[in-house]
Image (cartoon, rainbow over all chains, first blue to last red; front, side, top):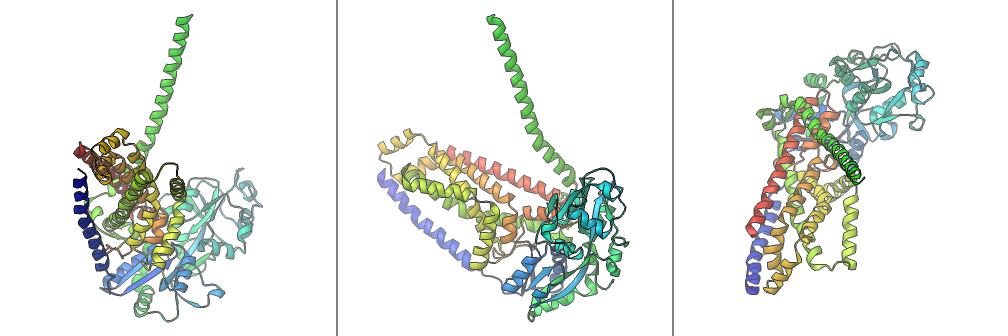
Length: 282
Length: 284
């Protein structure tokens, strides 16, 4: 019995060694393919759009592969600086301290203030929005609404929507008194649609689409300008942002071709298909 | 007097039974509601074409074929690492480490700490270590290996528990028959523990399938058909997250994808149960 056990063990040993050798072979055999590869990381707002543009680019350029990774504008900038990605997706204008990077705008996006459809407040001034977000106004009654507390929905730190909102209203993050902190546009829309007392801000294209589809939200005009993709395209909506692809130094051949393609009129349908505003429409 | 007391007791028993019945029905209601809502939202979009084609228009149209394949690859890498490592570690703990020794306590502590680490920490670690330091980039391999680190403690615990349940009598009988230690492990211990180990596989793959944050940082966001495990590949959970959170009008396809994920998880459970039963049967 003991002998048999040892024999069994010995019989298995080569098989085990064989399996390990096989695994090693497979590992080394699967070397990375040599074709042109472009890595783009960054803003989760732009990622679906760039994915679609990349698919169109790949089918026009066989052999080229474009990997799009989402994770936020800050990550896009960090990855380009570290060389992990050749292009970064950044959904805001570059800051002065980011002068080492060059940006190419591929589309425009506007931010709309949204409330629940049943909220009777028709418009808010910039001052009222600031008062609501800093906690000075806590009841809808004070801005011409019903006697109900205001639920302030804010974006999570690091989101470029938040940065644009803050810089437009000249606010600081510590000054904001938020009841709910959200991450993505869809989450913001779901939060406001589910709470008649809530106020939030999301991408105009997304909000317009959801409102048209029957989601119970309403877009508030800002400084007398209606919040719509048409106004963002015309350039007269105050709260809008560029969707940028940033790079450092001279981009490679594939990256250069991709940048040209992403800024060309060929991608207009793709841009409007993702509820953003194409460039030449301005 | 006594009869009255009895009567009172049985009445309170009945009340209790009803209460518990109600609670049980409420608990059952949760999965029924969940599946019902998914079916109502997602079933219209669920076609053969949906299962076989790659996503288009950021996931609003097209299917999830490539995402499904990436998910299976990531899961295969994860289980391929977790099974041998985890089983080896569990066997070591059960067979070679004296209970209560310093080594045993140290190992158990390490496992408990690893098991309690939030998944996002594994995501950051995986991104830093596998994707950047080892140069694997955003790839199925990075994702699978990171997931393996994450579910390893879970699997070791499950395997260890089932190995420990082997009756002492079997061990004594094996010793009396002069069976080698390895012979005992292979012929008696592993087969009797097989159903429990299979349960560990189910738990591990369930957690791996549910993960989004970890994979967003490691396996990535790419929806192309994977060609090798150095390619980046989006998994089902990441796809659902992206459709629900970043893509306007992606709700229907998110629900349909969630249905597929649910079926996949149940499928693994059934498979594991069958494998466990067969290997247990084979030993008898």
